[in-house]
Image 1: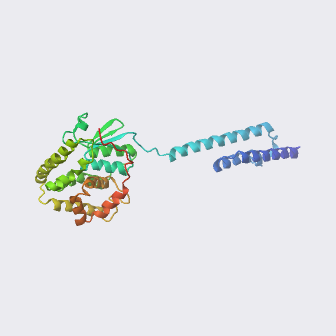
Image 2: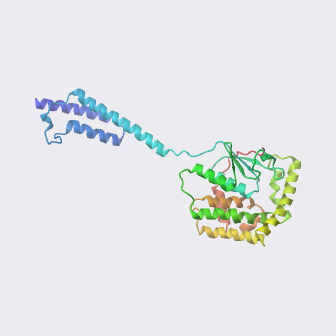
Image 3: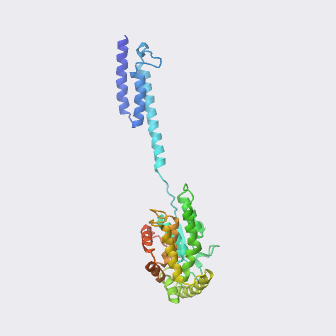
Length: 328
């Protein structure tokens, strides 16, 4: 009698084993199921060291109930594991739907924001602002550029714009290290003040910097002439005041010293951020970018060691994917 019962249990166990193999979902689930089946059907000793064949054989219906429980648990385990894995793998990157930058093409602060957007591959539209009447931003209480509209929200001040956008893109990131903060402050408090006296050093250089007006912006022919010559003349005189205010005696010397100061800060690294640019790299590159093809920028590259770093930064920029708007 006992032998017959054992044979029935063995046949049921074999059937359970085949069912378990067919219902296998994952290595982990299979291992757990086999463990339970072995405990139910193949073990010969229970926790009290009593031979299991001394008990009545397990009815067929109960054994299959156990198998169904194991299979259902395995399915739940696989489903839960898949859901958790998907949540961990999927990294939802913040991508705004509509970004519009109100700018002057030659503005260092505007170019700082553009460098950040392009490095992070954020598509944006451009509205070129007439520097004489600023009609394109009359809707705003803030009368300076850059102004960045992000899904209808107005952001102002280049450093604050970058901070807000960076935080949205990296909500779990830690605060900037002290080195990055130090050089971002250096850009805003020193480097940008060296640029204007160099860009507008002479009437011819001032006009060179405003040449973009003739091909950018939704301006009439008369507005372009007024903006180019009026803007160049105004900035030529403004630059003289800035030169005096910031105690700059030799414009080019101050520019070269600033460039070499930055190269020295790199300390042999590709970027201040190491193998990848950080926010300080983007700030320096951004404010220097509008002068790169002007006489002042060409002189800077020819007389300092900043050229290689600048070229590496240019290679990191991603095109704006053609999303431009030259009018308001």
